[in-house]
Image (cartoon, rainbow, N blue to C red; front, side, top):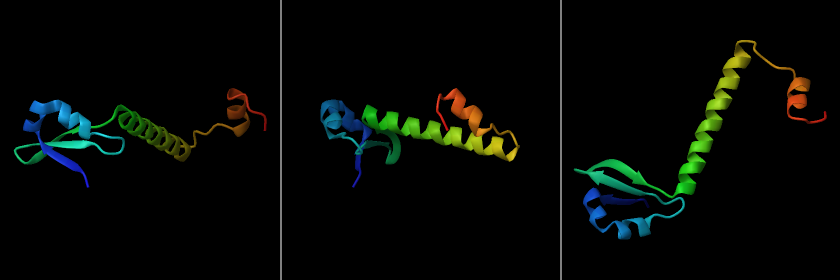
Length: 83
């Protein structure tokens, strides 16, 4: 169950921060509507990396549809991998 608190609880920010844990962000509301999220830095980094990876995959798919491909031997050479 998510932790949802009014933004006014930030007056006691230490208590709010103590409720944040890995995979357990704290959601803050303003006037009853979700406004902010406080999460652990590791969670943020993981989400950012996943978003970046998905963007790269999408770009690769678009390139492949346009016929812009690179032979596997060339990729292996750039990555210094023997096939």
